[in-house]
Length: 148
Image 1 (tube, rainbow, N blue to C red):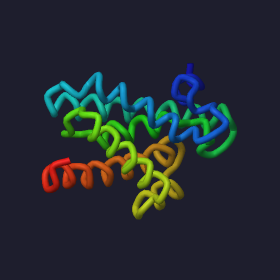
Image 2: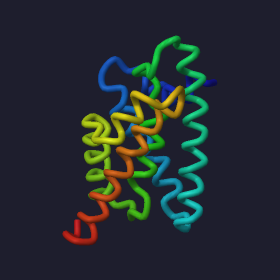
Image 3: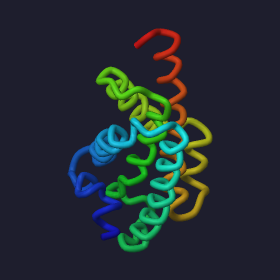
Image 4: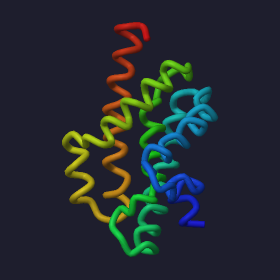
């Protein structure tokens, strides 16, 4: 069960771009909770993040490898933060996905520090939360200032 959840229901085991594939799984999950009132959305995203930290930690032990590429539950959690307070339109989802992937790859401080210094599941998940928050802030600016 841990390997299935950590691997994003198998998407993390794809031979090419497992993080990108895992991020895609965040989209239907976002859509499913997108109509929750914002406090419930945030509580759900936080609860999923706690699950992601636990699962990522256990998966790291099972795989005997720090932040194995097949662990993508962290990307799913990061995507939920990318879309906080965002209306689920095709343009918003596409823009949020691109922004999240950019910030997840680039790892602007403190994301890079989180990944290197936090232990276990926290080290795996926290950089993606930072990427999601960065992506969310940019996405909200694009929506409210430029009307995308």
